[in-house]
Amino acid sequence: MKLPLVTLALFASILVSLDATVYLKEQFLDGDGWQSRWVESKHKSDYGQWKLSAGKFYGDAEADKGLQTSQDARFYALSTKFEAFSNEGKPLVVQFTIKHEQKIDCGGGYVKIFPADLDQSDMHGDSQYYIMFGPDICGYSTKKVHVIFNYKGQNHLIKKDIKCKDDELTHMYTLILNPDQTYEVRINNEKVESGSLEEDWDMLPPKKIQDPEAKKPSDWDDRATIDDPSDTKPEDWEQPETITDPDAKKPEDWDEDMDGEWEPPMISNPEYKGEWKPKQMDNPDYKGAWVHPEIDNPEYSADAAIYKFDNIGVLGLDLWQVKSGTIFDNFLIADDVQEAEEFGERTWGVTKGPEKKMKEEQEDLERKVREEEEKSKKQDTEDAEEDEEGGEEEEEEADEEEEGEQDEETEEEDKEIKDEL
Image (cartoon, rainbow, N blue to C red):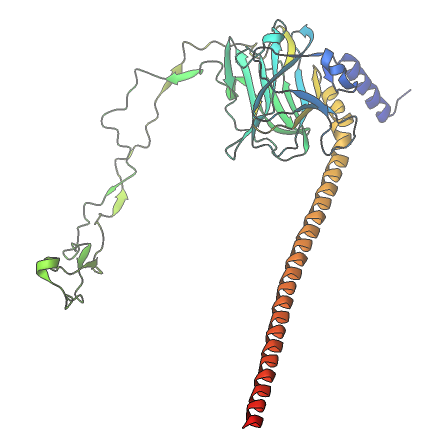
């Protein structure tokens, strides 16, 4: 009996899920229960405090609760432990969501994956880690995704520039590390970068180096063009760049005893043609650019286990933030990409739309409030101006009335004087 393709695909998905191993899954769905699973470092006494919050806007008030930084200009150091494992021979997937709802100007949003023997109570910036992954923002120049691997005790930064999201919405970051020494970085389940560990990091010495014995031959001509020997400078070419202004005249009130000898000002010479250069022609002896020969690097040694970490066991948040408010949520460490994709769709995929809608509604309401406030201020200003104009008119009318009364009194006095006469 043949099964429908849809049924086969469903079975395949179930089998993949059964085969997948999830080492860490943290969604903060049990209220303050997270405090029993996460350890605050005591390396410094003034680390910033974390709180559980969904923020000012969200897709689901409970599902979107995560760890939020709560104090400005602080270092933060928090970690959680899980059963130790090695990623030898299988993929390693690190995934989490992050929301910078505070319009972050400078601060980290990355996670660190540590060996299981990390002293969590003493975790700090110099604690040796396996992987550092996630967004980092500082000003306009730094808006990138860090992908740093530790190889033989040294941290190595990716040589590519991966841009991170810098808006206020929640975004999902995924790092996939494969046993064939390849990697992939996703943002919101879309691939933004990929390649090989050996090519995109300087963990190994280069396979080839320039031959130290090779030197460019002394007669090697690498000039593509040369001066045309038949081209000569015209006789009238030489002209000064500036000349005295022929229209300038000494001022009539110029006093040489007081002002010194008068000199006419200089102006640009309209006849000046600039520095003369002969025409260029193809170099008949041109041999092309000399390429330094390369040889195998004797210090290079292939390593098929660059990707491998033997004792993965702690996820940490070790970062600095100038303006607090970042929310971390939906942590996942697993060995299956499909598991990460499905987890991302069940979490971030479900709430991203409603979160954006709520944010837009809040912004629309805030805009209307601002418009009403501006309208009210404008009306208050107009009313004040009208009151001022009305006061001036009343004062003018009072002055006119007073003047009229004075005129009447003057007329009566004049009349009385006339009657007496």
